[in-house]
Image (cartoon, rainbow, N blue to C red; front, side, top):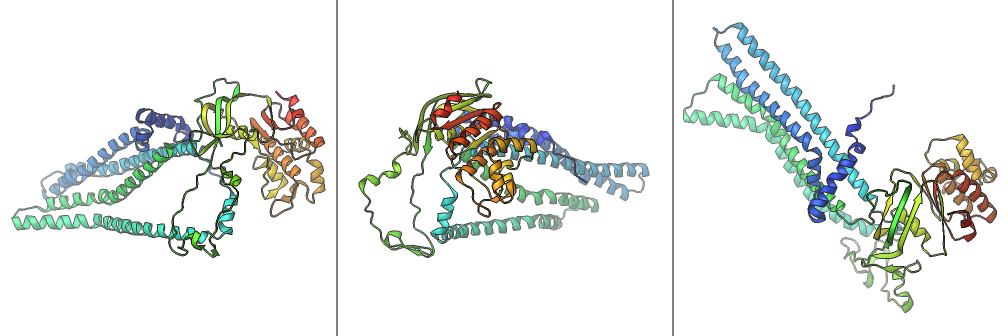
Length: 520
């Protein structure tokens, strides 16, 4: 039987997402990036529930004191005084039971409120971090770099660095665990030691204490076991939380690769760019330092990283290649004030309206692809502003089509619910039926590294079909017809881009001028 229960929407991230964004924006506006604190923002997120939980906690402690100090003492006195009525004894017993039940009930209420506050704080911080990391991508970091990392056997050198860091971390963890173990044992020892020490002092000073007072005193000390047992874990959680908040503050106050308008100015537009200046961030090489552990020698003096030995190398490259890494690949690109940013697009102003086909034509290297990647948030804004309707879905067809190791059908549906009629229309519009007939298993043929290989044109049409099948509101096409012949390209442009996507917002980028005549 399926569990039909669902979490409360009020405790979900989406419910408080805007409020959390406002709280963090208030921190930035009031204190600036240098003094803004995630800790204060989290406190503001859960302040009302924290106050409510504190009130219940105080009431719970009052019940505990009344039970241990007052009602328990009254009952013991009544037992020692036979002259008291039975009714009075029963009344105190009832109050003792009610105090115990009330303390347990209020503890559960306090625990629930605290957990809900923690869920809200965690969801709020995660929403802030998620928004932030979307703008901190590194498109220049690829799987190829991981391949080179293992190909040149650099993992041994990096592993030696990780082992050194881990060794220092291990000492801190051991010290932390020993301290936590010591603090965890204190709640079991403190009540007994405190009672023994108190009775010893009272005996040495000649102070009289009755059995009732001794019993109440021991009961009160036992009531302190839970707070004392919880304190080490509370202090540990508090320290870890403050440390995490400091790290999150550094992340959230770091420079974002782009900025956006607060909202779309014209509700008919899905994308707005005003005087946008976009640039690519380039990596600045830094010295990794001398390796520790195996392979400590300098590379220039015949070092070996792992099992690969290197001889001393003298650079004799021609002068025209010395600064080749600094030369931009886009015509007219230049460096901005920030040396790590290469300006590619300047003074871009455009609006993508709902349900429209917009064509962008230009020569190779003119920045057509950069325009699409700027809309996707992969470039850094150095000037102007850009707004994208985040409530609309975006599909992107790159120049280099990507195919996953799966069947052709799975590559097109890409996890979306299967609709046979819509699937057939998309396949027909992308000129794929003839290709399916030539394959051994049709659209159930597996492609990729574990399957058959496809031509560049077939991959491109699969990529276009995937974007169309997704039924996204905004379709970004980066020269999708460059890998197909003229006849197939005309079929895709007429039946797919102009027909199936007539109710979508399409940005069509190409270097073929004749195709753009049918666009705006």
